[in-house]
Image (cartoon, rainbow over all chains, first blue to last red; front, side, top):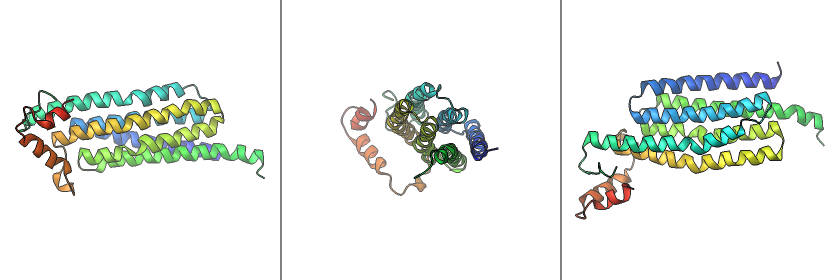
Length: 102
Length: 135
C-alpha cells in the first residue's frame, strides 16, 4: 500500500468512529434539539465523505451533490428549530406568552 | 527547483493527509456531541467540521484534481456553507435557549435574560420581545 492509501484507510476509520458516536447521540437524544444537532453533524459528515470519496477515486462527478447539500442542509435545521421552539414554548407555558407567534 | 515528479508524488499524500485532518475534526465534533452535558454545549462542538473540515476536504479535492474548473465549482460549496451554517446555528441555539435546554449555572453571563425580562415587562401589546422574535 502506498502512503496515501494508508492515510485514506485512517481517515475512513476515523470518520466511521465519528459517525457511530453521532448516531449514538441521535438515538439517545434526550431532547429534540440534541437530535437536530446530531443529524446536522451527520449531514456535514456526509458532505465530507462525498468529497473524500472523490479524492480517493480520483473523479469530480459528485461536486454538484456537495454544492446542493451545502446549500440546502440549512433548510431542515431551520424548519425543525422553529417547530421545536414553538413546541417547547407551549409545553413549558412560560409567562412570556409568545406561543402564538412562535 | 522542485522536480515535477516529486510534486506529483507528494500531492496525493498531501490530499490524503487533509482528509485525515477533516475526519479528525469530525471525530472531535462527534466526541463533543457525545460527552458535552447540554444541547447548547453540543452545538458548540458540532460547528467544528462544518466550515474547517469542509474547507480541508475541498482543498484536498483541488489538490487531487488540479484543475481550475474544478476549483471554481468548489468555491460555491464553501460559500454556501459559510452563508448557511451561522443561520442554522442561530436557529438551533435560539430554540435551545427558549426551551431551557441548558444549565444556567454553566453561563458566565446571560445577556439575553435581561432583554427577555425587559421585553416581557413592557405594557405594549404583545411586547417588543414578541414582535421582534416572532418573525
